[in-house]
Image (cartoon, rainbow, N blue to C red):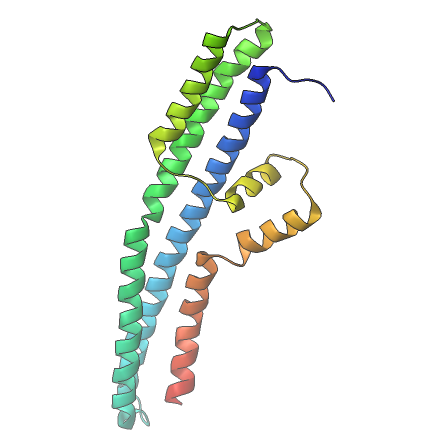
Length: 195
């Protein structure tokens, strides 16, 4: 194993952080998209349920339809408020911007690495300070899901357990899936309750 220089170690750290930030941006974009899809599908379900009294055989179920409409409307209201409060779209933009700025900084750092120039302690402090300024500027942190997703997408070797855990968290155990499941379950529940 070769000994890495200070700049090479810092470059590796920046590379991992930027990959995690880009992964976090993707995750936030998915949450934003799926929360909107969930609200749209639920709203369509509400309209569909409200049309049922106009069909033969369902006019006597107007009280049940009213109850379902109120429950589903509350769901849309809650998801709308939570999604707005979570600011998934804004977080996605900030994660992406941070990743872009880290990419630019790492590219500049690569020029120093290629020169194989010896740097003094003050220059090292300045490199660290610049990295920390970029991180502080965006005032957010990625999660371990994003960190490992960034490593995976970057071709880094990680353990099988961590790989499987990240895959499950990234694709199945997250808010996006919750939003979609609820949007799918609402029409099914409506049909089962009304029929």
